[in-house]
Length: 285
Image 1: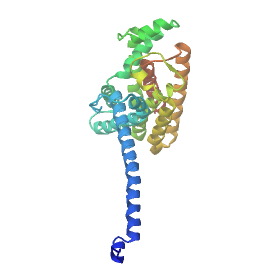
Image 2: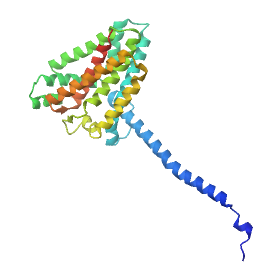
Image 3: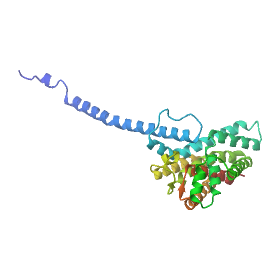
Image 4: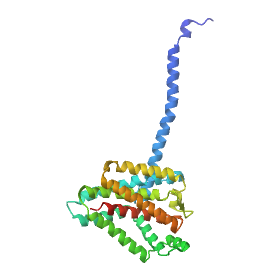
């Protein structure tokens, strides 16, 4: 039986090459598309974990997340902070026709405390109580583990909450919105930046999980988020806020290193609150 020309050319070579090229292209495109989709899903999971940790909003995943994603979520803290800031700006704007500057300021602090579950205010109280132990490191760490609030802690809470309310009450116009937006974001950036170069003093806990991975990666991500978040506000008061946040963070890191030789979750949360307060005071007009 001889091969006829029609049988041999039933599928022209050009078609075969085109089909092969298309197949190769699909085989290369599919893994790349999957990789990008996987990265996006992972980022969204990390953002949800950060939001679930920093707020009382029920946005966390229903199933336990991998430890790597829990650690990576730390880098997204400033993004959640700026989201909180936008929320405060919106609430303040809605309340403007109803209340004056001072009362709105108190309500804003109340809303922020409620949204965050007062988690880091608890860190402020515990840190203040531990500070009363002086240089007794073991006693200070013991106090940090104690959930009860002592006199130093109560006084610290009064001052932090009062200073926030007074700073907000003393500002108005666009400057007020700028401070409400920037302070929560920079406070959460400080929490990430503070841990760079410091040991975590406990083997367990949320802080141990978040600090178990690449802290430099989290710091880079947190700083990038802060820069993007502040890009619309490249003004003199924004630069002042950034400078205050950076100086306060460096001072707290030096103090923690000398005092206890590292950090705990309470110390990190207290630093976020203190930097947030410092930014509000710096921008108060």
